[in-house]
Image (tube, rainbow, N blue to C red; front, side, top):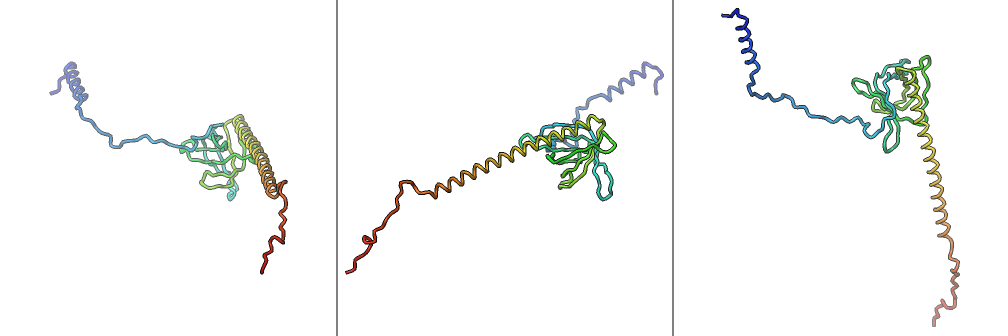
Length: 211
């Protein structure tokens, strides 16, 4: 029979709560054991030159229209050993690559008509696992970020062009020196020593007498 006494009801509630909180000593093992997994992005050997939020579009030649590739982080990366510079952009949620190409001295960026927050360029892109000629348009949240992106890409392209020109000049100079060494070696091998005299054979001494 339930008691109407508030104090008695509180004692019963306390005993019930104590029973619920009682430690039985039982241990429950997890059904699935999760292990830490190291995720590699392929960017571990590269330095980040620029990292900005943007939305990327690709021009569809067949449909003659711009198609959205994704919204995410666009990065300019420089390899620590080779010095090669590339542009990589990943979608913000899935981290799927929507742009991945080298920045070459020949790259040209220009402001998209009618929008100072956007710019367009052509590149040989590898985001789909094969090289394709693509025309990209990228839009930033501000005019300042768009200008910063264009200036950074153009600066890297100019620096790479100077490096390639210097390497070409050095290679030509090395080839010229090697050619000089080769020609000099051939001429020396053909020359006769200064103190060498022609050998004269006396035919009389070489005759064999027959009796």
